[in-house]
Length: 378
Image (cartoon, rainbow, N blue to C red; front, top):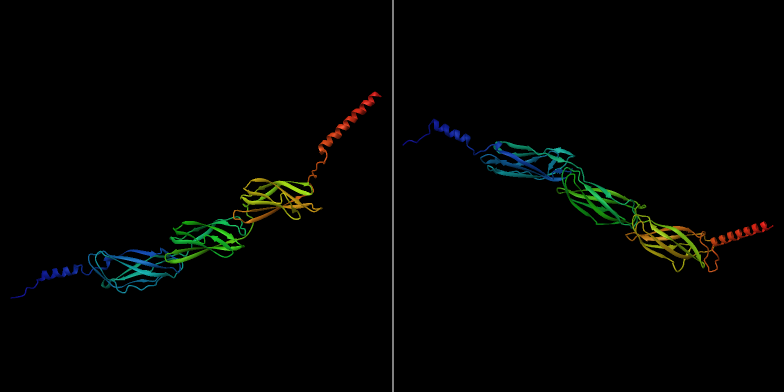
């Protein structure tokens, strides 16, 4: 019994079926569907990752060899994929490479390569941007001048001029000869062109430099930028300014009595205001020290102090002591003259000067009338 052999037509049909069989797949069926760089923009020296996703869009399995990333400004720091295996129809594969930016600012194109074995090689350039622009910082609010021991309110503005977001942004004051609260301030994430502010209370003990260090992360990489604020002492244009006016000095039983007004011409309150006579005067009872208390801006209060002074003393200072809101002590002195004082007041002081003048005028008028009458009689 003979064996059936396919005829010429059957053999041709089998050959055609083998040629069109989907078992082997094709290079065109595997394509790169997405790429991602983290962080989105690297700074020079930054480490990050490049992730490439591929998909088999064909109807059959495709055999894969190895996968790797070729350097271009960005250096792979991890191992390539030596053997990948197969990728089934309609399935996806993801490849992640650790990289480091070893190039200056610019855009680079490291090349992803995937071995498709008998179907060739899939190659795809990955655009990677490198930008070394740091975050910026500036002092938004500060006093006109600083003073030793006086707390100053400061506001620091942090901006993000980078093309990608910055995370975990914080500001840390650094330096010596000052105390500050808080010791650091957290802003968090800053979007591109975004900004945030933080407030500090700074109390300098001496003239110094305060460095506000801005710390942030770009991906897994930590970066810093410094803002230096010189702290120089000077006169604060807003501070309290007690001014003494309308001073009158009288002599009473060998004791001087000075009265007048004190006004706060500044823009901040003067607290615990005291007025006392300064050397060479010697404060005496009943008003060795006059306690005014608190003077708000534009407030005025009268005062009275008593003191003794040696013969020949023509001038003494009135000393004003006051404190600011932080308890810092300030002292100001106003000289007053003892020469233009009023006379000593006693029970036998006589008729007041205006009354004497009137009496003299009356007597003169009476004498004139008498002279005129006698002349007419002659």
